[in-house]
Length: 369
View 1 (cartoon, one colour):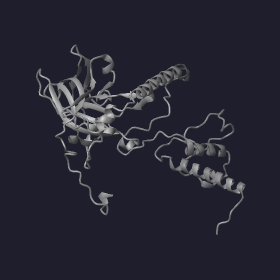
View 2: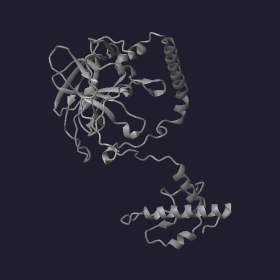
View 3: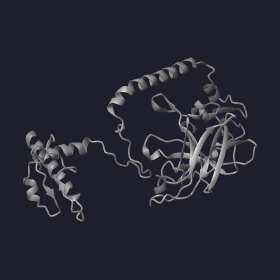
View 4: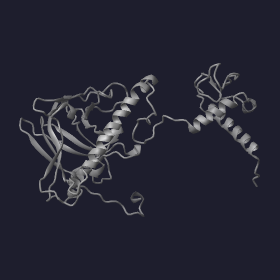
């Protein structure tokens, strides 16, 4: 039978358990092949003027240390208590995903001095509130019965009606797009550029290289991408909710005959879904003539980090927050793709929901749960 003790006895036993567990973790973390010595209860030996270690002696811990000597040592109680609190309530920068190697985001950027934050933060916050005000005013002014989104939901879309979402007429239009390649991640030698032409179009060009960086980590290289980075005030995501009433993605472009890939990004709230996207190939003809590529949304297949998955489902157009165009055909040499605009189009004769098999096993089976 268990016997209930008073508050003081409970706190005393809890403190002893914390000290014992901290010292055990210090012993088990020791590498027997390493001759370096460690301090009990802490990973970094504190200085002489430390708040919690003014009179503490740093006992070197080795694998053959005796447990009785650790139990009798009470000089590190404050250190053990502080270390345990840091373990329970501290912020750990550990990976939080099974398929993404990046670490969890830190709470703040440590490289930015505090004086710069105090100097520039009020102005940035003021500017964001100004953008939010303009957004609210625009939404209030657009409240009317014949609002386009409402009419579109009721089916008031004509056959072959198109809407341009993004064009590249000014530098401000081009600033919403970001470029990247394996070279920017120190994984390859591919170059990428996105420029504004005299025809008020965007020119996505560079040189593709499949040569690997000899770092012992990179397994493949040879990709470049341009991606939309459209944000609302206070860095909120912009969702293309009006796309739900359209059936095709429309791209007016002319290329060099190479194959590109269009990706619709729809990351979720948890980090396991940050790489979710739907992709489809973009075949260019080459030559000086423009081509109008109408890709059905039902043809986009589900990918994670650019890799196709076994289980497939149709893209939810309301969750699409970004779009990107990527080249990764593994052919070395220059590439060039000129884009006039990107939009959506409606086809009343298109009734396909999803072009690929979406069968799932029943619930009693393991793969169906």
